[in-house]
Image (cartoon, rainbow, N blue to C red; front, top):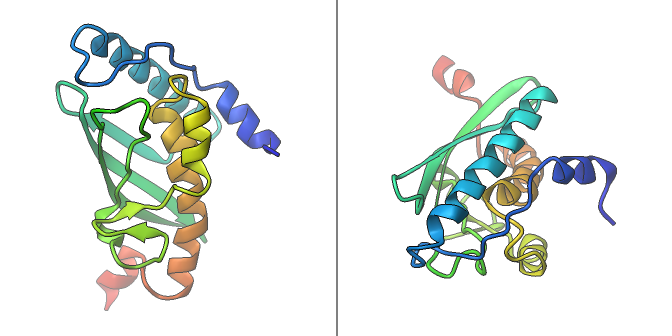
Length: 168
């Protein structure tokens, strides 16, 4: 059921081994190191395939993540702030990814700008604990969500390109 592009993307994202969350003071640094290595590999692969679409950074202890993600539609770049916290039950619980500026603009979003991943991504995550990490959440969660929702929001006029907004 998984298409070839998704398989290729997933094959380049290293799987994680350490089952530890932020409360596990001894193992969390190992898990965080694996997360960063996985993210670096995914970003590198994305750049090599001319598909660079996000930047992330975290606080010192790796529990709060933030950055930018973008989607190119009809040769225009739409950029959004991204943020999420690592739950104390991580990695059993997938990250809840938020795009606050899109809050209330689509039915596929919860209050606070949290994107809806419950139908497709969360069951996949649950089957792959602890192997999936932040890079997988981006590749299999946020990426597909953006691909479906952003063009729809543009078509409905709920988001406009910043340059078009500046011209008015």
